[in-house]
Image (cartoon, rainbow, N blue to C red; front, side, top):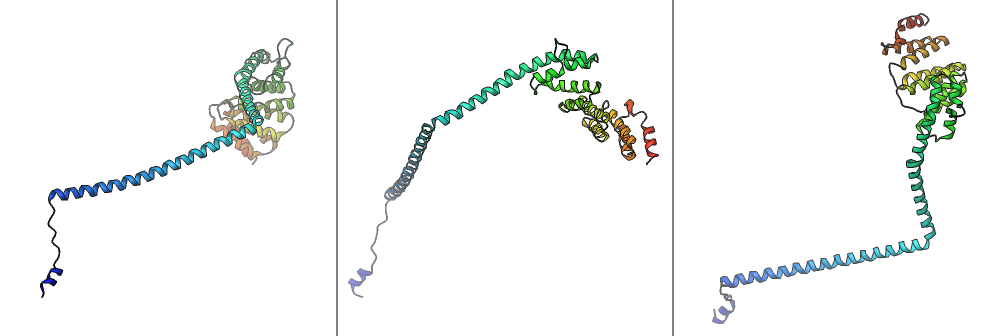
Length: 271
């Protein structure tokens, strides 16, 4: 083979780099990579900044539109604001000034009427004596939301019941609201008495049952279970009477439950 061809096919010899040259090359490559990273971060930062500026511009535009709307509708905006302030002031006055004042005054008026009620002077308790108002005037003159007026409805209803004015008794007792364990049941029972006196036995029995079950207790419930049982027995509903009499066994310490065996034996013989 000719010498010229041997030279052409021979690979160029590259002498090995020194250790220092190799380290310098690696450092150069690392710096180039850092440069690319900084460029990317700079591009991202620019994009975020641009987005922020665009959003800031949108917020300013929205603020401008809001100001324009307020300026164009100033009368309406001020009117709505005025109504809100007026309602807030009215609520504050009613809850902090008017209502407490009404309650205090009504309680003071109620005291004398209660004294007449306790002495069975029911007409004076209802109508007053000329110097002090009665229950009816207290109800008419004071706010319906006061506790004193609510209690005056109860007293008025019981007063009318004792005076034999049964429809008036039902009307006023119907306006009385209470969750008291005793009084709530007694008010319903008194309505039952008034209906029975008017000859409406169905309503009377219904209210007796409501009275007994309203807030079950040893003092009130046995009274109205017994009254309901007697009314049902009188009407010929012996099964219903038995059910009411049987409930007296739930209150063995009540004096109204002492003769329960006798009541049950009587109605069972008729079923």
